[in-house]
Amino acid sequence: MTGHVMRQDRAQDVPHIAGKPAVQKTPRLIQSIERSAAILEIIAQKGGHARLQEIAGILGLGKTTVHNILQTLDHLGYVQRRQGDVRYHLGGRILNLARIAGDDNALRARLHPVMTAIARDSGMTVYLAVPSGDEAAYLEVVDCHDPAVDGRPPLHEQLEGSAVGLVFLAFVPGLRKRVMTTRALDADTLVRIEEARVKGYAIDIESCRPGWNCVAIPWREKGEVRASIGLTGPAVRLPRARLVRLGWMMMRHVERAAVQQC
Image 1: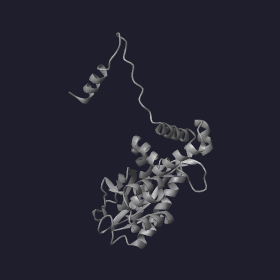
Image 2 (image 1 turned 135 degrees about the vertical axis):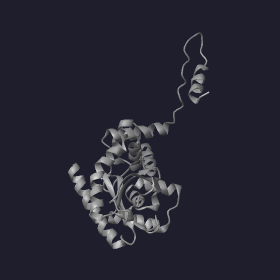
Image 3 (image 1 turned 120 degrees about the vertical axis):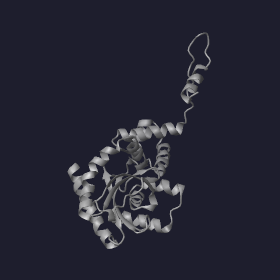
Image 4 (image 1 turned 90 degrees about the horizontal axis):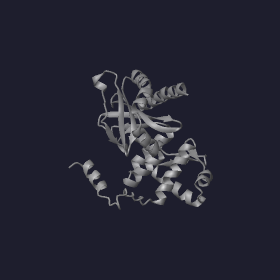
């Protein structure tokens, strides 16, 4: 008997009285989850950002109660506050859920011309990655048709094991908080994350794949990092100094693409 049929049978076994249809029992709702969902919906309806007083007023709750829920959502990565901004914004984790439920093909189509230009100017393999849970998922690869530099990544990779992962850990604070609650990041990884945040790009020197070096930059939409573009090739052809130059070249391509989409 299939699971679907079993569910139907259980529904038929609900008792009824005098031939009247059975009354469905109202599920026991958890108030804090109801309020959290309502807060996220309010922030979304307000264009992706809202003030504490505004949220409390709409819900008819005290500011302290709303603040405590927002602090929890912030810690989990579902909302965030930006430097110099008192409003609460939808966080990287909820945007990642929306991406998973949506269509990655649109992101591929938008960034394929940029990736092609970077591959042409560098002569290296270029790839597109997005955060997926606590990993980096690779959506697209553009190579330069040179077998010697064909560095296709796996489908998924641990965040702290790659340049694109370092980009996500550096520029998606909610994701970083979530990862740090599930596993410890060593001192060297924390230093590399901070370097990426300050410089705007992340470099991987053979730590992800022996004999191969990488550089990666963020791709932003509406101020939020939604993806990362990475470049990889043999270490002998990509010393650190060249990776830095290529990182700046990649950022210029991305800036031009962002301006064209405005």
